[in-house]
Amino acid sequence: MTLKRFGVSVPEDLLEKFDELVTVKGYVGRSEAIRDAMREFILQSEWHSESDYKHTMASLNIVYQHKPKLMTDLIKMQHSAHAQVISTVHVHATHTHCLEIITLRGDQKAIEDLANKISGIKGIEYVRLFTFFLPESDDEEHSHKH
Image 1 (tube, rainbow, N blue to C red):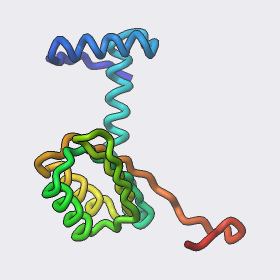
Image 2: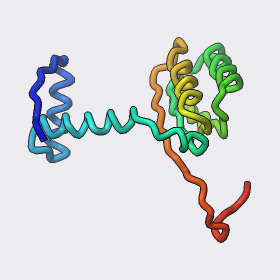
Image 3: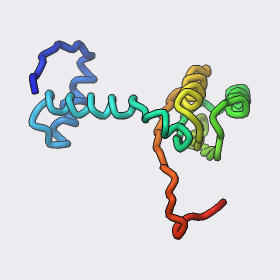
């Protein structure tokens, strides 16, 4: 494996926090921590093959300001989504902020489209998409129906 050097400019406070984590997590140095962060970033960004699309599920975690119009927009987007909304959990995290966790099923594009639309709503402060794939099993002994 050939290593490539590159320069990165970051705010000083971000680098200080990063260096603290490098120490806390026991990395040998910044380079290994950056490689690890890059691998994680790539893993989170990559999707599966087309044959797995029908088994894609996701959890969309959203933190937003508690405002009626924003909540209405969020509900409308879920109802018009091409991804199937399985469940929604609404948590009053603080007096001013809510956490919403939406469980989705669908294909890559439908899930990403909904996540991107929601992240663009004014007042949304944090969006994290976690995807996972559950292949169907032919094992009838352990199957169950909902």
